[in-house]
Image (cartoon, rainbow, N blue to C red; front, top):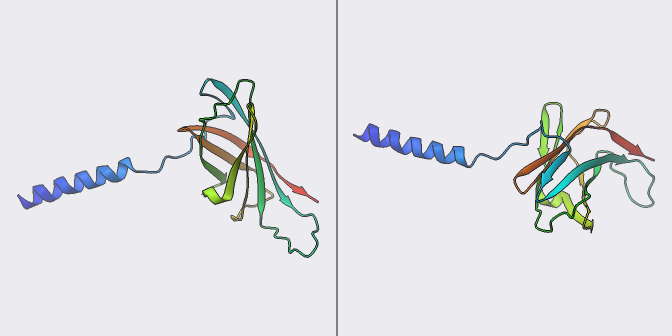
Length: 148
């Protein structure tokens, strides 16, 4: 009887873990998606800053990004940017809320901007995924530029 009870408890516990598994990015999705009555497109700009600065140390490991979401229709103000994931080869990094911010330029253009200090090879392309309202929009093979 104890074994049956223990097995039942284990099944319930494991099923609870399965239901709370973090959702993975749909890397097959493209950079255009229909969401909240708007066709939204993602255009990504990623760069490292090599410009000289006065009285400030430069950090070459910092990767900057500006991820622009545009639509001919109005982007619903209820749209929530839940997650930003960067991926390069076999590594991926989910950015914390402190690493990015959302800027609304107008009803048709939103921008997700930020910086990352992850170990990203700037000579290789990266993939970017944005989760918004449980939907994914993805741009792959994004070049990392260098600004001088």
